[in-house]
Image 1 (cartoon, rainbow, N blue to C red):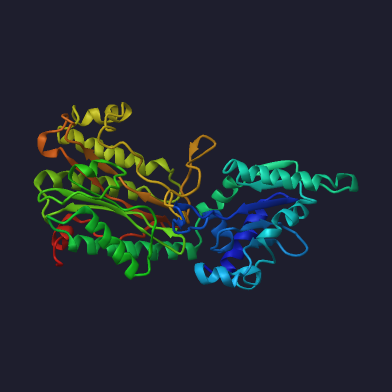
Image 2 (cartoon, helix red, strand yellow):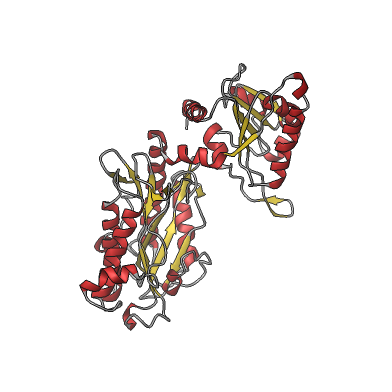
Length: 440
């Protein structure tokens, strides 16, 4: 992202805030993994979205119409002794020079300066309820500001959750955001292709995981948007399987749900393919049914349609297919009733997609005033129908059991219709068979 992009976002957000409002956001905290070892730091998405500032121990204030500038940052000061151990910090000067804060202060001055920033403001946007300690700290600053009431100073009396305000803005991606997400999806698609080529019976699930992570990192996607799912055989029927420690068996399918994060933006792609490079008749039949359901859903991902339209299209296709295969009872006329009674749910128990952006399950309401939201250009979503027929599911004929299939793509809504950002990831069954196991 660019400084101009961050400024544009803040200006747009300021225009959505009523007069005499203030937005206060804390950065993410470092999280201890064990003793003195931390998990890799990842900035809070809202904080990163508005500032680009990548460090912990920081706060931002957006104060529209403030004479000295809208953006105030609090951050760690430069500390040469600590920087030898932990790396360079931006410091107060870097916050203004590199990240273009209008004013910056050391984080140690937060309790002293924040009450003065609240003076003259009637309402505060804040991530209310995320952390009780932060809520109490905000109330302390407000209480300090109120001590000047006899001098005619106004202090905030209205407190609003910042999440909804920011979610509405983040839901619609700018051209630069979409280009970044497209690049992340291309990196992940190349990694999926490489994993298919590397796959063969006898390898372990975690070896495919390591291949995927390696291929992403080679292309600049050093961070994964979520822990990769590599489920072979029965493990593919576990939706969020992350053990990734079983051996790949000849004759099984393997489902890989994985995507890198690039510049704070997630990709999310799922592909399912045969370990030995050849679909069995039953596997191919179910795979082609899921692929048809995904294609029907993607066709509904256009401006003006409602969020639920792709899901309904996928459900209709899957249910009709399950009836045709004899897995669900009845003929073609029974499909509508089976959908109404949700008889498909033992085989397809999740929604067909979710918003995608800085978070893999990104922000934004799916319903507005009780109705499914209409799709608009700039929105990005996943489309991921699946079928999961566990071994214990005796409603299905034996050849269909122990099979889990999901096909997931990242789809951007455009003025003309949609763009599949992850189109480079192979999903045609014949192309998949031509790739699997071709690299030693």
